[in-house]
Length: 188
Image (cartoon, rainbow, N blue to C red):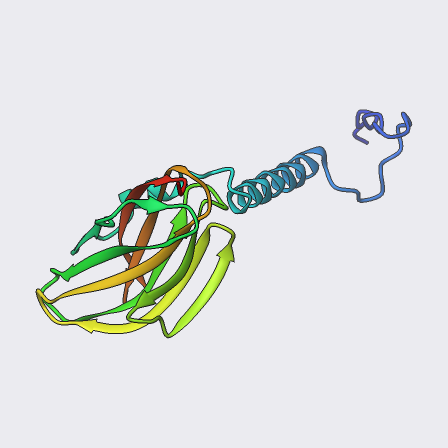
């Protein structure tokens, strides 16, 4: 008859009795690591929605498929608090085939600084994702090398230097992120 060493002590109660099929320490560590990672991930997502990652949009430039010429044409007159002002987004399709503007997302670096009023042409649908983030859905097709101006009417709520970006989606794919900045003065 072969003798076996006595079982290791049960860490929970100090006895030498087996735990009756409870998971091993390795399984417990793996489950704990997964729970920890999920908690960290949800914290990052919550932080993003809370505005903790205000510069996150700038990172999207690295992932955008930039086959669209896009630029922002700033207002030609001074921007004053409480008065609407235009920002023109000039888009040129450069991929060589017709594509459809699916959406343009407008976000500002800080909430409660600039608000979206309207656009020309008007969006088919509009969604407020967060205080500083608006989704505008369009169905505008641009042919090869065709250009289109979309005029956004914004209103400044506070004086100072304010910034944001337009994220342009062609055929539901992010094509380009275009940043803008405006200096806003108090009315005299």
